[in-house]
Image (cartoon, rainbow, N blue to C red; front, top):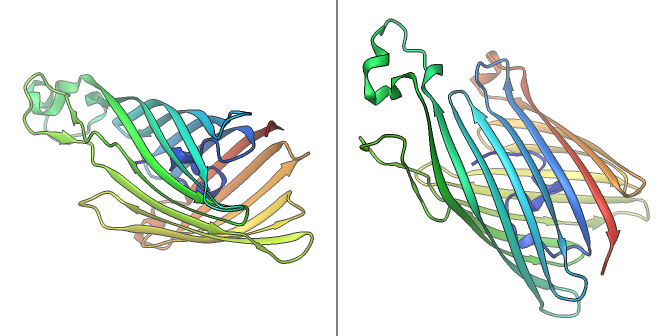
Length: 280
């Protein structure tokens, strides 16, 4: 699955149950340039739009993504539906489902096999061809929230599909299910300042767990700055600005504390969003 540092600014990317939990529609674009300086490093672009129905406790959304890493890429379009119920005076719980498709591509012409000059005749190496596997896709999530906190759990690539890149499979290439647990809490420090610690745990077996923890401080609901720590990977800085309570700009920079720092200057991420008028 693709990765974002500014996940807390667009929780819908990691949990389809978020649709319908706000009282307005919003659009977000997320653009990530990972490991700048490394050849064929990941580049990820996501566009999402989601919001509630005015008279019913439900919402709809759509998400388009393109994730490119060297000779492989994933492009997908997902539609989402969510329904939420009250659990008290303020707390609510939402369940959401996303369904759509994914195009998984492999460009064999980008493989560099060194001294093997006969790679174009070996079918196991895709014969320098471009191959695409079209697959159905789905995600499922549950989201518990109130005005000052949220916690959610979600699962992606539910079908666990096999990629059909060859006419006769040599070995199954399976899209592994990915699981996310995320949460955040809003602390009101004063009339103009608030603090929001948040965390996300990511797991796609048999890979090990990975988690991010961060804290974001916001002034006057318009300017924010924060710091994030990703276990086994990087320390990240975040800044952002909301103009006229409508247009949002967010930027983050990841500095890797692993040996990768000898080859990369870091990762950059940009978020641009628009918040429509309230309808509920």
